[in-house]
Length: 239
View (cartoon, rainbow, N blue to C red):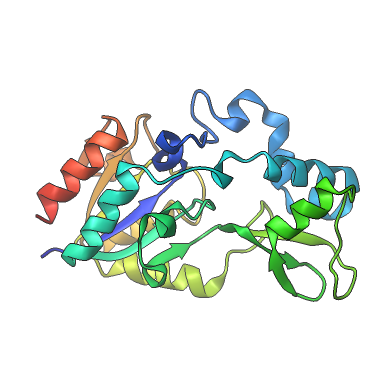
């Protein structure tokens, strides 16, 4: 059984009703100003940005989304013993909801379910903050110290968790196949995992509707819809 590390981006969740960011119908393609809601400096310095960010989080369709066939195909790969690690740029937790083992899922950009105080580090849940917003608090503060609360997502200008990143690098370094699914491969350091995998001898497969900066490094490029292409690819590589 070959060892496979998979990197997933927003494209794997579009069939679950969650729009991507940079595609033709992406959130930031249609509304470039929305990107500011994900900028750490803007978030910390502007209460209005925080309020708009909480409102946007509350409207996120991920709260009601269900895993699709591509998520389930990765669960099946894990059960066959072929999955080295599942590295994801997504914050929707649909991989875990589908049944992927939490210890194999590496959330490079954090998650939207949990929240954290930027001052004291106290953990909480996003749903609790959203309930306070709905009750009339425009900018819910930490109940421990009064500091600014944000979701446990990695914003622009914020460093990735070094433990998670190190685990992702190890997974890219120690696989035979590295599959990038539904990601534009424009965001670093996630995209550089492709370089690391190829450097250590892995074959790179890119499953994405649009061209990426790493297409020239791939041994296979697959443009078909992810819900069709990914289950077929995984069944071929790890039957």
